[in-house]
Image (cartoon, rainbow over all chains, first blue to last red; front, side, top):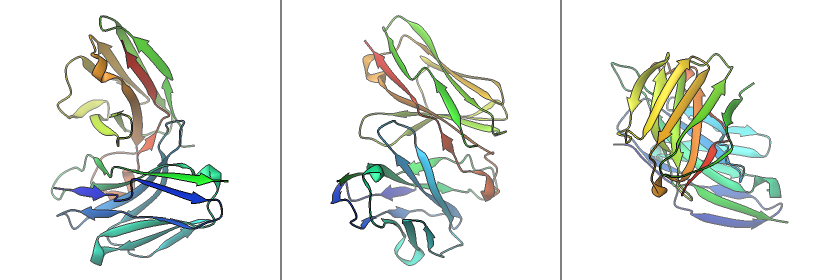
Length: 119
Length: 117
């Protein structure tokens, strides 16, 4: 069984603060993908990043950075110098690739972290 | 372009009504998905279509009837819904569902906010 845990239900910061969103996952598969999505109040889930299980290299994209550690089954997301526009619900998700057949790409989502950035 | 378009944006319907939700993508994707999302919860997968064929039905009640008339369109027909079916319905698409891991980024639409009275 697969599971994604986002222990932080809500985070509130002041603009320009750095903030890290935690994500811990469980899977029996050796091959899988991890994702982060952002859901602003408009409702659309916006794809932010995908990381496969073979690649533990951390990634930086502008103010966003991701730290993937297989040893601790974590895939944390950091926003540097947060802005009001970063206010949204952030979901971490896991997709397994099942050996011997097709992967229907089912995403297992965490419960989400509500991030509020105050001006 | 990673746009998935859903219509309508909002829908209010009675329990005896029949309505349909529409989803469209022009990215050449061959897999399309319906999700249901209740307030303050993550999306829950309902259906997956691959090459216009239903691949997965996550034990969804028959009052929800999906249809994929072509590779760009996905519909969700609604009939005799219950108030507890009120939710945000999200459509997503991806290049495919094959095991090749390069193809399974799901891109989502903005959703249809459904209220059942």
